[in-house]
Length: 154
Image (cartoon, rainbow, N blue to C red; front, side):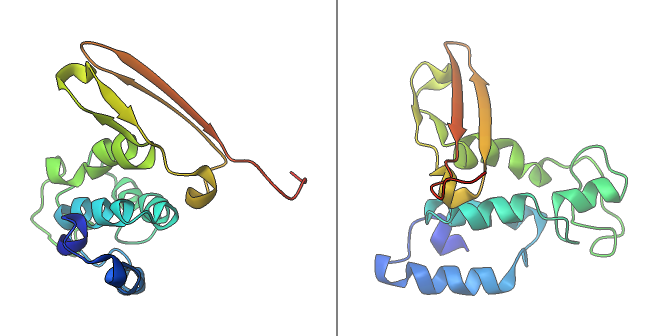
């Protein structure tokens, strides 16, 4: 996952690396999830990135809620780290991944004085519709995407 996140995989090997990553699911720690999802989105696999972000499995942010946490935990579950704290910054990867990778909004200068918007294709991420508002000290950006149904049915 680290080589994929840091752009060290050659283009010809990206598909095989993604195939391996998909076979493992969220096999990393909460800390590693940041790099795993960065790599997945950098490799343009928005659908799988969204699948991991919205998973209800044991290694998911949903599971933290199910366990009773109101903020991100240090580990996916108490069974992985019984002495964990329930207020841990490294579990908050979705707070930056959703605007940066899922919605494609990247600040180019401090305070969003300049930013770039490059959302994934809604068809590839399987999101029917999305809205995002990002505010910075210097700007406010509103992004809306809609997935179209080319078959003519709803």
